[in-house]
Amino acid sequence: MEAAGFEGLYVGDHPGVTADPFVALAAAAAVTDRIRLGTCVLNAGVWEPTTLANAVATVDLISRGRAVLGVGAGHTPQEWTARGVPFPSAGARVARMVELVEATYALLGSTEPVSYTGDHVTLDDAALTDPRPVQGRIPLMVGGNGERVLRFGAAHADIVGITGLRHTLEDGHRHEVDWAASAIERAVDAIRSTAAKVGRDPQLEALVQHVEVTDDASAAAARLAAQVPGASAAELLSAPFVWIGTVDEIRERLRRHGDDLGLRRYVVRPPAIRHVREVLSDSLA
Image (cartoon, rainbow, N blue to C red; front, top):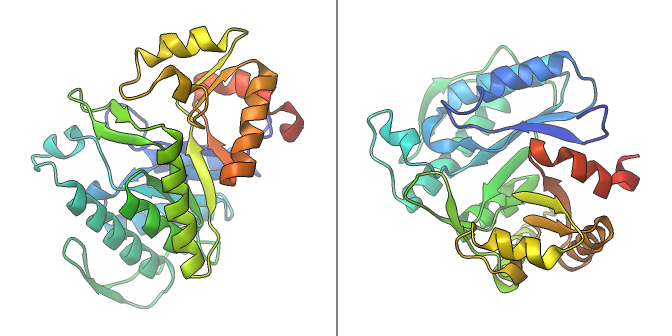
C-alpha cells in the first residue's frame, strides 16, 4: 500500500475471522515509513479503555506517530454472544462507544491518573505512563450510519466514516443498506451541521463495498443489486459505496461526490486494489 501511493492501511476488528488489529498494524509499522496505520473499525462493545489506550499508544510509538484510532458501535451479534454476553440494543452500543472514546482519550492525553464514571465504562485512578503516544493527539475516526454515531463523530472525530449500512441480517454479518441519494445527503447534512455548531470540519470517508470496472455498468449493477438487500441498480450506480463502470465513468462519479458531498476519502478492500489504482492513477502518482 505504501509503494502504491495509498494514504494508509486499515485493519478490521472481527475476532476469529480477521487478524488482531494491533498486532497486524505493529507488523505493518515495522516495514513502512509513511502510511497511516489504523483500525476500521474497532467494536467499542468489547474493548476496555485501559487496554485500548495501551494498544494504540504502542502502535503509535512503533510507527513513529502514524496511528489512527477508528471506532464504531459494533454490529455483529456473535461478537457478544460468543463471550456469553447478550447482544446490546443499538442505543446501548452507541452509548458505550461514546464512553469508551472519552475515557480512552483521557488516558492518551495525560500521564496523570484518570477517573471516569459512565453507565458502561469506569476508570478509577487509571494511568498510561508507558508507552506514551508520539503524536500530540492520535487522530480519531468514527464510523457508522446511525445519526447519533455520525453526530458524535462530527463533534469529536478527525474523520467520520459513512457506510450506508442498516440492520444486520440473520447471518450476523451482512446488512440491509440505505444507499438512496436522500439518505446519503441526510447523513452528510447531519455531520456538517453538527460540526459547524462546534466549529469543526472533519474529513468524510466512505467505505466502498464493491469495485468493478466494466463497459456495461447497467448490467453489472442489475446483477449486483440482487445480492444487496435494500439497494436498487440505480442506487448502485450513484452511491459512493460502490464503484461500477468504466474508469472514466467512475472518475466522474467521484468528482461529483467531491463537489456535492465534500467526499474525498475512500476505504477500499484488498480485492479491489488493482482497479482502484487504475481509477486513481493520477492522484496516486
